[in-house]
Length: 324
Image (cartoon, rainbow, N blue to C red; front, side, top):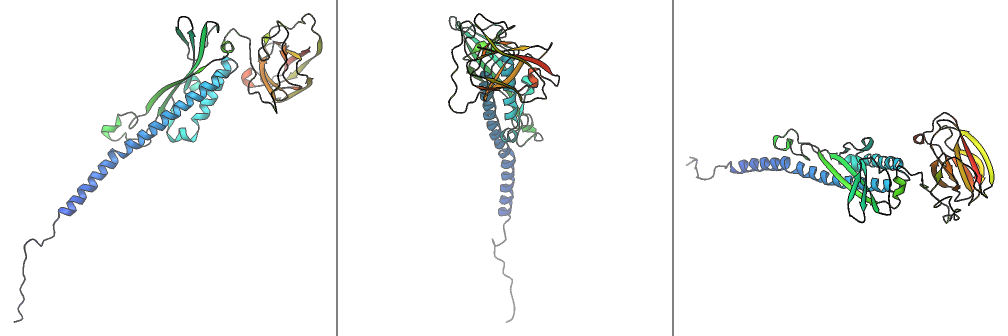
């Protein structure tokens, strides 16, 4: 009585297999997380970057195709590309331009396809054709976008992934977009035709009168040269205006009537070759030796000189001649 016995039962010891299995599970989960999740995230960023590159190509091609001349096409393309490069989406997917015109990431090409031989000639990058022939050729504006996307989660320190583009190294994209040119003569190096750009009207757009025979082919195309009155043409007003780039909005005070014709003559030696202005909100850009530009709307003539047109702080004399 009073004696105690220690009874040992086989199989009642705590097993370490459960703890070992949990450790293996954590190790496997870590390997999966490190080896699979970051690459998947990087591939998602790669897909977003490719879509962004396509958007840049499409938008810049449209801007270039709607420009008034080849230099404006390059400037419009570059401006649009730089604007898209700075968007939040481009910054998120680490999109960076790889070369291109002015470092913007895109280059401009002109495709000329002969309608009889079906042969296509490509001009570029950023070089236009010497002479356009719309009667025998179809013209397209092609923008090629060159970009690279850096990994969202760089895996440069992991040996297997370090050399893989898109995961351990930046991935390069080259995409393009084509837009047909309805007025290819505006991109001709030999042309003197410049169209209205960014025109806006309040209410209905004014319909310009038909130009006299031999003066213009349409209201938004002009000829250039030294002004001289044509037979039957009466000079209604003439006055030189002196202004510079400092005068961002220069109102000449000259009241124009729709249907009148105006000619510009740069009187200063070495003066700018082009000028931007507006009449009653209708914006135009034209050479400073324009002849017989048909006024599309009634209002004051306002000049808005731009530095990329050659205007500076130096004052230049630009004569305006108003005729019937």
